[in-house]
Image (cartoon, rainbow, N blue to C red; front, side):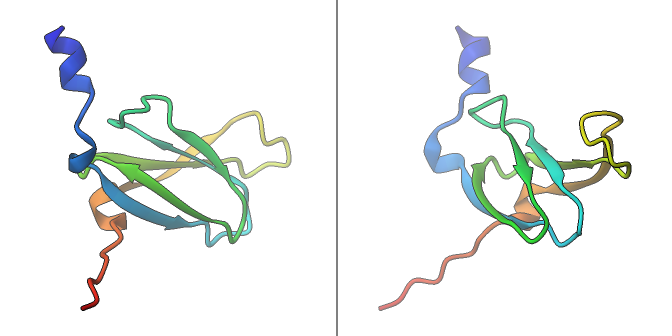
Length: 92
């Protein structure tokens, strides 16, 4: 049971993250170390994505430079989720 509990974190430990696909290519993004261990999304050019993650997680960005998108996906960038964190301002 201790192995399972180490994989699942409390929601209060999660941060809200924001990513925009600023390229003209379709991307597949994946996040490791999340409660949903299979977090993967298709992000179209110009699309914005909000997601929750642990601060020490990383967003992997994959794309394919060829026309056949389902083959030869390449990891093009890895970004720390802490760098994608949304900082909310409190209004009084």
